[in-house]
Length: 321
Ligand code: 5BU
Image (cartoon, rainbow, N blue to C red):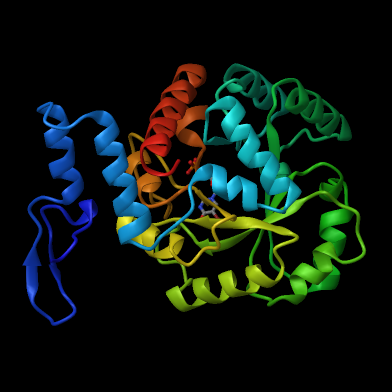
């Protein structure tokens, strides 16, 4: 029997023997039809979907087991926020003024577990911004994720992380790190510091034509296993559920997979960004979705955030919980 991913539906592809196969319906499609026709219950649909994801494509732990086994305190905080807020939505708030930033953040705060910043985008940044951000984050139970994408030698990233005008190590719950320079970057960031910040490593990017290969992703994950004290998981994009599943299956169970490039309406932005849908991302094993323009550029960011949150959490409960 050949198990065909939902993402292949309607497409032709070559199997490992070089034969062209044409996928008409997937097992997930059939299950959904059976549920729509009331031939199986929603619970049965969920149980079989979970079986397909965790047992057929490699046995994996459920959410509670993952939380229980997780030793990294920052990662635990993120798991706990997800549970408390029944959400796996991260807002990427890439606006350039403080006023816009906080106006939108307050509007969407009940729906998100974490706000992702690019602190150097703000044109009116002052240290007061951080004071305010920390207060709002505490009031609304939101974590802070600075998407700095550190990518230099250990000595330089240490200064970039702790110093300058941003002093990221004082306030960010999480940062992003490229592993291009090798493990020394992690020593530079985390040795001899008392920072509570933990890292997400870039394992697969959403930018079209990016140079990350499957082998590179695998090596990033191998390094992460040795530094699990400071690493919470990976940023991983896949154009299809199948691509994401391949990545997810390599990731240690207690680490998280966060997926950027999620948008309900667009497939790209004309500048290389690629988007995947919520269902596909979560079915592929994404633990939380990162959404920027889909929310902050919407006419009504609050109602859009609610929509993303509800769809993503529903998919998470169905396939990944
Ligand atoms: P968007 O507006 O939803 O396209 O914003 C996506 C955000 O996620 C933006 O801040 C990017 O810098 C970030 N991102 C991404 O889009 N793709 C990646 O592979 C990584 C980060 Br890593």
